[in-house]
Length: 275
Image (cartoon, rainbow, N blue to C red; front, side, top):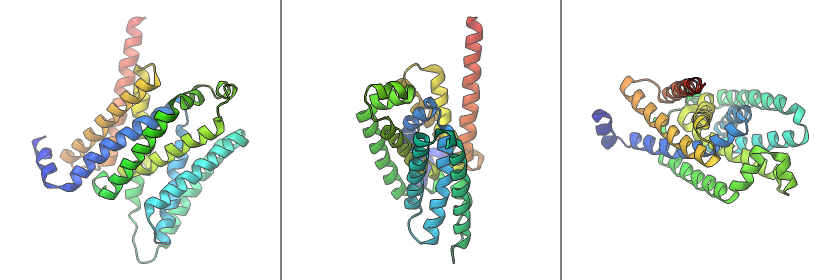
């Protein structure tokens, strides 16, 4: 551990990675809780994979990949939200199509980008050690927006998460709130891609919240515990990958998956003992 601490004082990229892990854990804990409770992990996966299309277009037309990713993510959130509202029976088909088409567009345009070799693996599996100060500023801004919206619309989001029909009877704009929630999740996914990549982002978004759901009874408690668990998994993953000299993003997810299996086992043993 002393070796890691000494490296922190010597290399700015490690400091950036730690800061990114902390801020990403906040965003992940908040949005991941709503993803798990509302059972929209598949939707989040569709958005995450569609994002690659925006990245590919950004490289081909020479503008910011982050801007392209945000654009595709928000567009995907709108499309999925609209389909759920207007044609619920076709929702899974549309999500699957966006998933495949987005990745296909991304790969094709990255391949066609002249004079530049795009590191596709960095987007698929992430690299938290390559996070820049610009990425940190974007992540900080995202956290401010997420926290502000959740504080402002907490009761409304709770209502549509648990019972949309009851929320409609209360006069809430359920459709607008649902699409806004998807947009928040989409923006969180774009930022998390910098850490663990498109392939692994859904695990980091869902596993800490799923674990916290086993041991808490309220959304607020679930959010708080999910943030703490996300911090443990991301910082622990960075430390493990540093000492083992293995990819950081994949290590974070393996650590998260192991934590989930342990949490489920403990919960089952607890239930068995009570019986």
